[in-house]
Length: 373
Figure (tube, helix red, strand yellow):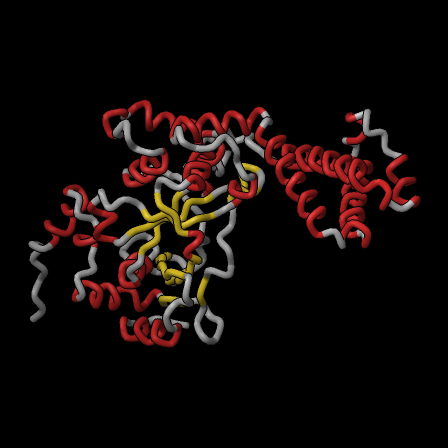
């Protein structure tokens, strides 16, 4: 759907209707419709670093630590790591944050703002985010995702998940054998007999891991066990407990925990590995004039098992037009929309209240243009 003026935006929002109960609506403007929902730290840059376009994410921990070390007076001792990330992003650093706004007009401004992309179509992105995924800066999940920024680029949880899963399966199978052996079929006994539970290294080989996983699923779904609902629940609880404990004992996870608890001492020393793969919306403190003017919040991105791969925003959050189309602002409509927005008090001068951001607009007010005859 094309947005050529503010009337088109109003019509589009009216047709879209209010977000469903339990959801809150946010907006983001892209000056190019080809842009992804991708935080700055994950963006490739072929111009500044042609030999290594992904230099930002590969050096995120160094960039963050350098910023905190070189400018200590810019931060308060009471600032959380998330608040520090917000502050350094404000000054132009690439982070794992992505700006959102609760004001559709502000987002539209960023989709049409002057710059290198005036000749490109823009996009207004509308996100209806579940309230359960909207956090405040003191949230445990926010502390976890923020702390990823301090891990080096090799940080990966793929192998940790595999070995924690294996340990949880072995513990759960042992628990079932101890309590329900009389219910296990001879065929299952035969399958179990082929695995040497005393030889951990042998168990960790590929085929044995696959077989153990299948045995565990088959045991749980066996009628004689499946019908005992309370027992199955106790097995699942044991699995989850063993998985979390073993996962959190791994060296890199212990280091991540150290960073989290250094930032938030009250954090319980257990990380749910699923939290590392989340993207959450965070309502920042309104202690920054720019955030106040822009009615800003942030998406905070986790990782997809490996730090070098960002977590993705749920496709369920993105709203499309009734025809299933994105909200596109044609390049030729940008200047007109900018003028309309200014009439509503939405301009660079209003959205960027800092002194250095005001200079261009203030001086340009006094340019005398040649009058046509």
